[in-house]
Image 1 (cartoon, rainbow, N blue to C red):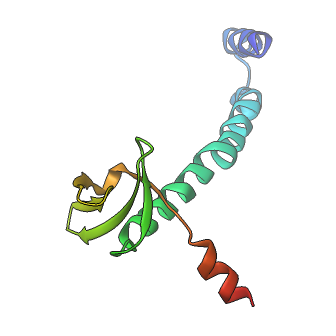
Image 2 (cartoon, rainbow, N blue to C red):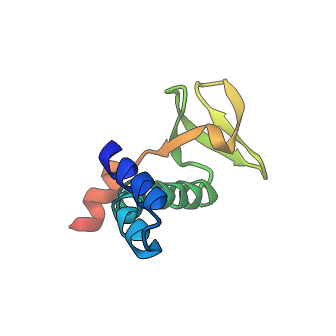
Length: 113
């Protein structure tokens, strides 16, 4: 990588044609494109799926918070959710504090039969 930069610098000092300089940056451009497809695109997809999951939450759904608390949703508000974590214990958390929705295995078994 350093040798490519030195070649570009030498070419510029020698008065080389601009086409050679652009060709030397082709590996950098390819690296950026590969990083885009391997890192940024999957992250955006995960963010969209998480947003969709948070918007679809309803009462009686079981969720896991980012702190690891497993709870049942009692009430869904605009920016927060009221969770039931015990017999008489409820807590209100922000929507962004929900890590995932637990899937009920009984419903999945009955749907597949």
